[in-house]
Image 1: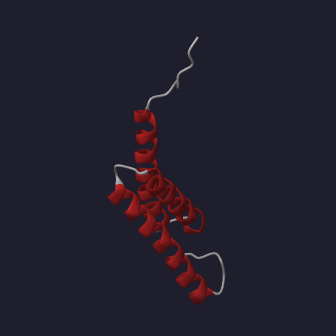
Image 2: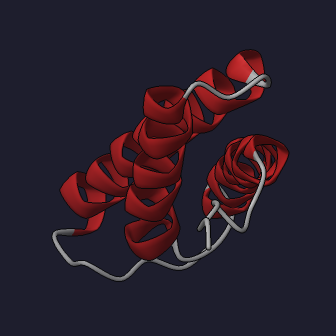
Length: 88
C-alpha cells in the first residue's frame, strides 16, 4: 500500500493568491477604519504570501505598502490627538 499526498500543488498556490488579495483589501480598508488591527493583519498576510511565492506578487506588495501606510496614518492621528482613538 502506497501513501500519496492528498492535496495537489495548485491548492497551495491559490491559497497564497488569496492571501495576497486579502492583504490588499484589508490594507485598503484599514486606511478608513480599524487601522490598528487591519494594518498588521495586512502586513502579515502579504509577508506570508510573498514568502510562499504567490503569483500575485504586485497585489501582495500593495497590501504590504497599504498595511504600513495604515500604521503611519494611525501614528499621525495619535500624535495629533495624543490618544489611540480618533474620529473625524
